[in-house]
Image 1 (cartoon, rainbow, N blue to C red):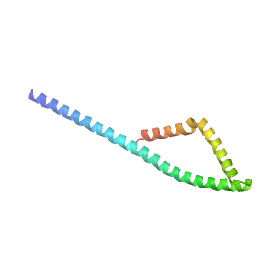
Image 2 (cartoon, helix red, strand yellow; image 1 turned 90 degrees about the vertical axis):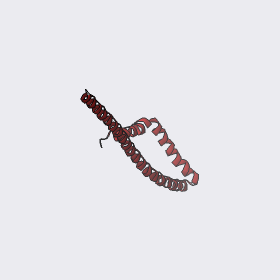
Image 3 (tube, rainbow, N blue to C red; image 1 turned 90 degrees about the horizontal axis):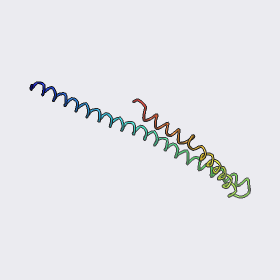
Image 4 (cartoon, helix red, strand yellow; image 1 turned 45 degrees about the horizontal axis):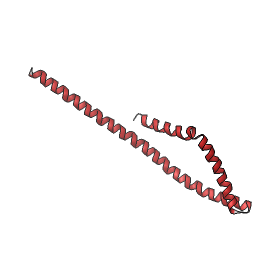
Length: 115
């Protein structure tokens, strides 16, 4: 009888160890996936910030140049801002297809990627 009790106790201990190990593994996997997604997003954000700064300076130069061609500096800024207004309207129309879905797919692929 005592042998059966010892065997059952050992079985419960092993089941408890297995459960604890499984929970730890799930936690570590979640941390790994989150770190992978966040590092990828942050690196893309850093590159995007540098690109935005470049684009800003190019746009200022382009606005000044167009303004010089048109005779008034502010005409150049109006022309460049009009182009951006058109781009914003197009992006707003297609935001789900061009922005939301690719970002969602990127996150899903990163989260489901086998290590």
